[in-house]
Image (cartoon, rainbow, N blue to C red):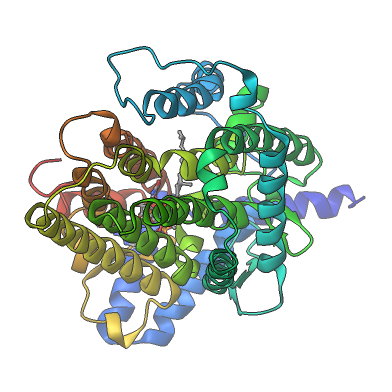
Length: 478
Ligand SMILES: NC(=O)C1=CN([C@@H]2O[C@H](COP(=O)(O)OP(=O)(O)OC[C@H]3O[C@@H](n4cnc5c(N)ncnc54)[C@H](OP(=O)(O)O)[C@@H]3O)[C@@H](O)[C@H]2O)C=CC1
Ligand SMILES: CC(C)CCC[C@@H](C)[C@H]1CC=C2C3=C(CC[C@@]21C)[C@@]1(C)CC[C@H](O)C(C)(C)[C@@H]1CC3
């Protein structure tokens, strides 16, 4: 136990540190950074930045985890509603879009027996798949990267071998096709596989919540620390849960669900080829687009370390269900529609859609890489041409390049791609457009959440950025 005398001295020091990040002090620090930059003294800039960071770290290290004051997603009631409505939506959309019909004008036909939805073989396939990906993820192969600094100042280490895992998975699929293993089992058992993923994500979220009750305050994720069980279960109470070398959030976000989505698509394509003797153009194109999206996420795996999911949100039901059930079994809706319905479009319709996808990808990749490279090395000579503005935390905000066009250029590119994945399904049905519609809503909401978080982090500097870059996602529109 510290002596009362020592404790009170520590308190004084703490108060002094807290005072050092008051708004007045913040603006004087920005002024010092700007002055030092004008003088061209990069050493002084580094020094002021280091001082500011360490004073903020001391402040945060000593605090018990602060309770979340503002609720998102409609608070506990909204979270409770989503825990039930998300799985229902997943089933409803997939049941409404089946071989003979794809419509929202009729009630989805419920399966004749439970065996259509639940199946032991599918459960083994799913669990085997999850274990296979986990083994690949912990193999000591591939670069190790450091995450963004945590509240404690510590940086977690992440093994980056996602792209290699994708290649190994593809090789295994190739061998399976060669030995005539029927991949059609994946499309036949689509619903039982989905049910296993749903049950698994519920069980995983419960385990994660129980584990999070025993962690130290520095490991708590601020958004999932309200004290309300339902809300924290949904948002995720622990920021970076790990089992030995396996970082569960990082793993689930990129491996079993994301690669699983690409594998389901490939299974539809192989089956279509085996049945029709040719690769149907529209299906092939969408499978290829989505494959590039998945491969890109794994190739630029370290870029996810600066996203909101990893730096800010806890690992709870929202992400567990999103990663393991929602992404693989809903994002493949357009390929599944094209596979089941055999719908096609002529090349002169597919060509402009392909161009839209390329433009979307160019913006998405350019924006994500620009921000990620800048966060990794703000003094990189390759980025020196970009205009930036200082913030009290020492970090700067990009106000040139992609990040000067709109506040979320990466969302803009992602949305263009989402549209390009649905257009090959034609205009006869609304359901294949579920993804771009849902995605637009998700990203508008996500932008608002991030805006609030950045205003909290960067104060007046964020307001300056918003004045400079007026549009949020779509130039001159929104
Ligand atoms: N397919 C899907 O279902 C989904 C895809 N996505 C995609 O994931 C990607 C990541 O998205 P997300 O994590 O939401 O958001 P961002 O990658 O945009 O990350 C937000 C963070 O970036 C930093 N930042 C914001 N503006 C600037 C700026 N001007 N200069 C420098 N840094 C800035 C801030 O963090 P700090 O300053 O602390 O570094 C902010 O908190 C996007 O491409 C998105 O489209 C997202 C959700 C779902
Ligand atoms: C349905 C719920 C209300 C919300 C669930 C959201 C999740 C499905 C998404 C939250 C952020 C995601 C990201 C990707 C996939 C979807 C989820 C998990 C991402 C891995 C897709 C590939 C991209 O290249 C990316 C940038 C790595 C994405 C990161 C965010």
